[in-house]
Length: 271
Image 1: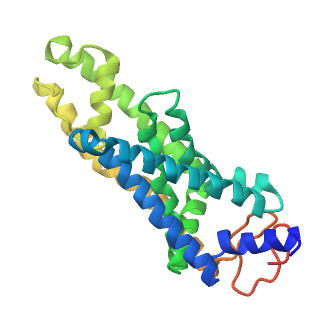
Image 2: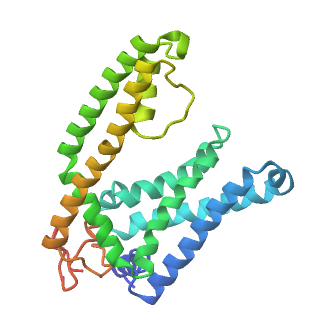
């Protein structure tokens, strides 16, 4: 078997979910990801760390080595390694193995391994839930198309909390917990987002009146970005049909092909 055929076979197993080998590879990968996250969580429990810390340590390193081999194989399997390395999944895969190696130099950094949970996004491909992958892609596109309006919206919110925070600092003052304008702005952000920690609260009638107006405004503010994104997603549903295949281009890594696609719409590579 030539190198080209070997690389194609490797690509079909690692990147595709339509073949039996590819499906089993992804299922075993998902199990390993879950196991690694669970091990890190259990290792953070003092009583378990004392009893099984060494076991957790070796399991963590074994899984990291397996993920490292998988990462290298993914790079080998594609014609243009940079298309995978700098893709969303490529960056996540790299970050998933990085914390364990960093733990050799920075104590406690291995707990960042929980970022591996993001790799479970591949479960949609394995379980053929492509309509949800399509919905996720639609959400990503909708966010991108509405980013201008969302940025303007957040600018307005930031101006609002700065003004309200400054006013509350003048009304309440340090004696009521508003020791500075930044502290008052923090209170305004907590209030307008309806979080309400309660660590700072206005004590005077004018301050409570202003806080009440900000609370009411907060409910209206929450609905604005949701409405913007919903409108864009509605447009996407009308304009774009969600594909149900799992094909990934070996050349450029594009994975949003139509069901009847024979060639990649980005680079022209045969699928």
